Figure (cartoon, rainbow, N blue to C red):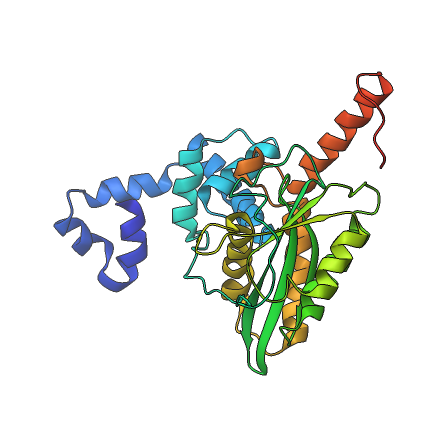
Length: 303
């Protein structure tokens, strides 16, 4: 009631408002003279941190992720408190919209078998990569963005933006991924995509073979044939494209994508991998594997 009176007193006056509310004017004035409680003081301090966490993470986190990030930073705060304070601050996370498929299957192309069968799990990095692409509407026409994602950690290992849907788009994303993972052996890597005509192209499949990777293509008629890649792209469309648009041209899209991917890989917490960023999970994996090798628990791997 005190907050409501504060908001409306300039319009109606304190006494007229109190006549219609179960509160005496003296109660209101006494409350205004009372020093802030310990809870109110703590709330104001937490609001500063909540605003910061929300802003530092592209303004896309809802209460759950803001709470988890604050816990990672050492704040002892209940989730319900974060939810309440975010409501007071008018802060909320972004919500996903409808998705649109951009990959068009080539009916005449020979397709590799589906080696994944909707099982998007991997025992470690460089075992299963997922590739997909999406579109971005700009004032100067459509831009297309291709991604290569490591299934183990959701780390985006390669990406490329272009105004064309030609094979060069997905091939450049693959080349970036191969360069980024040059420290590890790619022998036996499974590269999975949907039935888009760019992926079964001769140049693309030959490059995978050169790297020692095995190609896999999702089954026909299966809406979930590349679900994990589509999930990551859904986050990209929600957290960047719809949240920060409209976009003027390809250059704007490229720069925003670069910013988001750096944040996504190194700072965005993901619930499926334990509410930590992808890079943190991979650092833990490589550190643990290196320790096992040093202690003689496993044979050294070629990395």
